Length: 202
Image 1: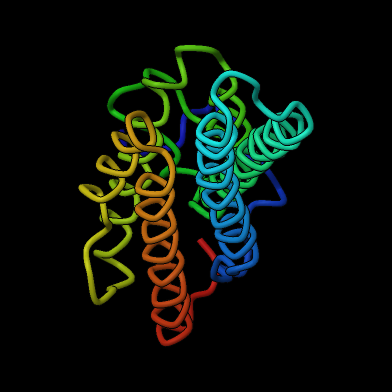
Image 2: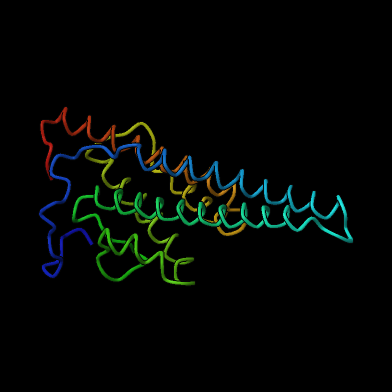
């Protein structure tokens, strides 16, 4: 599959300048990840304190504060997830139109599909691997024309997905942040290569 399907509608807003992906969403994700991790460990510490201080008569007010920290942590985790989805949308929007596909999906994948399909319960466990692998495959194809110092971090993307399922905080979050940083660096290098070629548009 190397031609744009006639049934695939071209988005006139699609990255006409080949500008690199900014770091704002990754920084926001990092902040949310740090706060979520602190909230998780804080909740665990407070729970231990509550039940060790007086196992027979736990402090009700301290228990309330513990659940308050827990609910705040859940809110931060959801915020982190939505920032991650926004980053996926941005990364997929960055790709040229004819690179938005995966060998694990029959049709073309729009940026909206790439991000919003992560909201489908259970299906997201499959979809997160599809889009991570497809994103890396697309970048490796683009390296032929716009060379970069490293290959796309496909193995890292798969590992990040696995740890998002088993140890999301902090391990999965850390791996995903590194993955985002590597993809962003590739867009900067490709943008520089495109500028050097004097060809800023696809």
